[in-house]
Image (cartoon, rainbow, N blue to C red; front, side, top):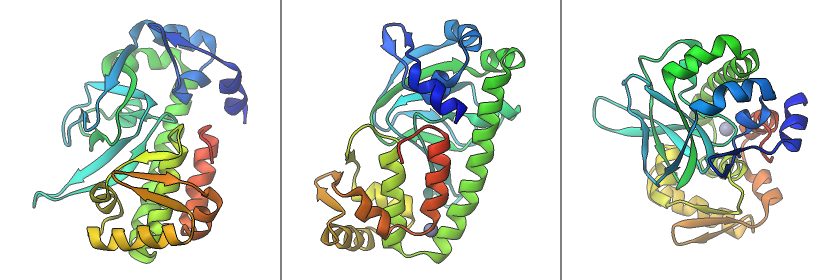
Length: 247
Ligand SMILES: [Zn+2]
């Protein structure tokens, strides 16, 4: 709750751009002033590649707007999206734990922007930034719980319930009710084929929870969507609230 209070009262600007990333907003002034000169504001186009699978993490990104996707590619050349990163967290979290020689692929799911910092500069700053270190390691631990939950969710819960959970977690990371995404992207994220996703989306639309548009989903009745989501959403919701996202 301490962090939640802090970031609600703070306003920060870098290079004329307002900071929306909740980690950066949650930092005490002293720590923010250490990191600030090392941050570079960057526009992130839809599908921009932030990290390449298996590669060294040369740069990390504090997402300001938009959603980035973690992707795992198999040797057969198939890829599966395994997690979402938005303004509540950072792309390249492992680097905070000293592991910068391997990453999942990370690409932008939507257009957005963020603040980029060289991994070396971040790692040099961390010893003098105990709160940043704590926040990043906490997020890394949360991510490991969520990835385990996702693995169970994919085995046990229906596509419709998983899709409802996914849409809610996307909604939590955006400042709009209109999610720009394709059914193709959603089918990859829930790990099923596109016809099944189309059926589940129309079922959620019949429930009055969403309106399906061309390359977009409007979250019209969030409460109804929550009713359709699997119980895993309760865990996501708890963590998203901790990160300061809307839930
Ligand atoms: Zn589930």
